[in-house]
Length: 263
Image 1 (spheres, rainbow, N blue to C red):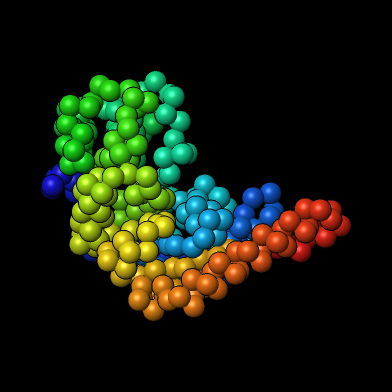
Image 2 (cartoon, helix red, strand yellow):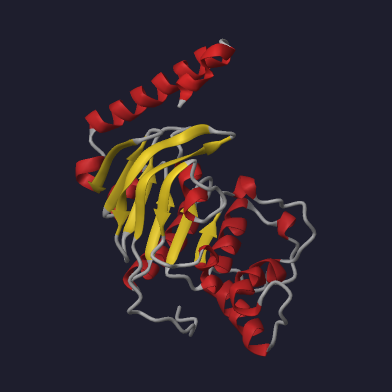
């Protein structure tokens, strides 16, 4: 599935988190995160619902600015980081064709109002073929199934041809065949030396395919080789930490004089 895109395989850009806190309306959702993601890392980010995985990813791609601390992207512009959001974040009612939606992955090359020439059209067709969506070019995105929509999102990500790729729940609510096909793309990106971060719930898949894991529960529970991170003790601690935070937040919501306790 060589799409023929040009990239510099010598690019080595780590992501460095220096005491980063992220949140909304000054209410933290990820606390005091410090650590380094080396270039070429294939990293799963896991944790209970509400653990801050999506919040962390929005910080990495520049949608959220840290409330405190620094995310050092090594000089890499946020527009050069490929981001695949959750399907739930996609407005599928917008009347745009699959071809045109996937073509938005070329904005970094052509600009927001740049023209699409023959080369770009060929790249879009090849990206759709790479994810098994040949013949879907003129379909409106709202008519796609969940699995087809996820394939379309992967096609757009392919076109971005980025050194850092951030995938938020890329295999959620799709069938085993689609998961297998899309996981093959993730492995290919890793083999090419790209940095790939993926928020996931399926621990069996994480253990089988992701060599490193960050276990998050508003703050770091464990971070390192997957086998050492996804232990029963660490998973129990992650659940306990999230439950404790939720109880504290609920108590603060009932007592306006104590809202600062949430942070």
